[in-house]
Each structure stands twice: as structure tokens, then as C-alpha cells.
Image 1 (cartoon, rainbow, N blue to C red):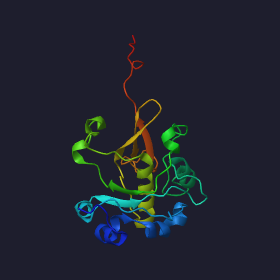
Image 2: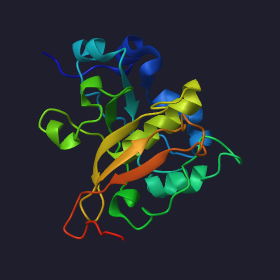
Image 3: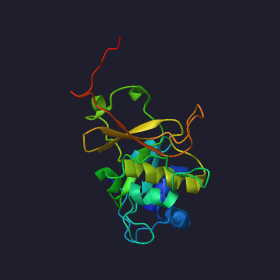
Image 4: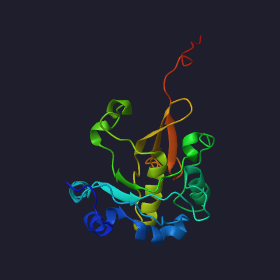
Amino acid sequence: MERTTTIDEAKAIMGTNFIGPIELALISSKMDIRVPENVPPIPFSPIELINKQKDYILILGTSQMSNGVPLTLSSMRDRFGINPDVSEPCFYNQDWYLKEDFFSTSLSVKWFLLRKSIINETRSKNPELYLQNISLPSAISCAFALFSYWHLYTKILWVNDYIWCIDTDHNGDRIYVGRYIDPEGKNKNGFSVHRHLNIRNNYGCIDTL
């Protein structure tokens, strides 16, 4: 079976769940990005896309901001800021990750097929249970998809949900992202980037009298 699909075919199949070079060009000024000049082949067959057309987004990644610097979580945070009172979409106001390697990892020029919602049976479960069967996305690919989808279709991905990522911090703690809006309204809007702390030998209890 042929495992490639043309851009026109993919766009016809995916509809508004498609963000290719033309769509990126439409939002390039808002995203402050460069659209890739050399677009790689779509590595999914028409049958694969038909099976995923309702639940997934097919998006072309780009590796550079408009000024030529790598497109990373860091450069996107610089572009979109951390204050929803100034502009949206934006990042949630945090700074723990600024020196972490994953925060300065560039997005690749490739096609990403990302699910639009959490797989229900994985909710409230340790992601390590699913690593052999599920390919977790990178934090930068999730951020790029969320901000691109917002600017193109005025819709928010993963409004209240957190998405486990393949990335880890320097301690090996797994990164999770998403939940743009706090359903309880206590926190400001923003794309969240968190880490799930593993229980280690230096965690424990004390008593008090």
C-alpha cells in the first residue's frame, strides 16, 4: 500500500483538521514564522488519514521564526508572551523551564498527525503504561499545533486537558502541556508547560506535635 498522500488529497480528506504550507502562509505574520520552502512528502496513506480525519490534526511543522531563529518553546514564548490581559493566545506565566533542554529544542520540518483529544482509557493513568503502544508528541509540536489552530480556525485545542509529552526535564521528570483555560477560573488563561515529579529518596514525611 502506498504510504504517501499529496497535499491536495490530504486537505480534501482532513478538511479543517489540516494545516499545510498554504495555511501556514495565511497565519505566518500572526505566528511570526517562516513557511518551509522544501515541503516533505506526507508520510501517511489516504486510508490512514480517512481513519483519523475526525480525531486528528495533520499539520506541517516549520523550524524557523521569521527572523531566522529556531522555532522553539522559548522563541514562541518570546513571541506570544505570558499575559492574556495583553494578548491571546499566550503562554501560562511560569519560568521553571527556561534553562531546560526541551525548552530550546527546535521543531522539525515534518508532518505531524496529532490527536485532538485525550484517549479516554488513558485518563488518570501513568503514561509509562502506554509507551510501548502510543507515540507521545513533543511539547513543541503540541504548542505549535495549538497556536496555529487558534490563529487559523479560532478554536482552542486541549482546552481543559493536559497532554503527556515525550520530553523530560534534567531530572527525568515527564513534561505535560495544554489546559489553556482553568475550568474553575482561578488561574489566568495560557498554554501550560508542567513536569510530573517522580517520588525519589529525598521525598518523605515529618511529624509534628
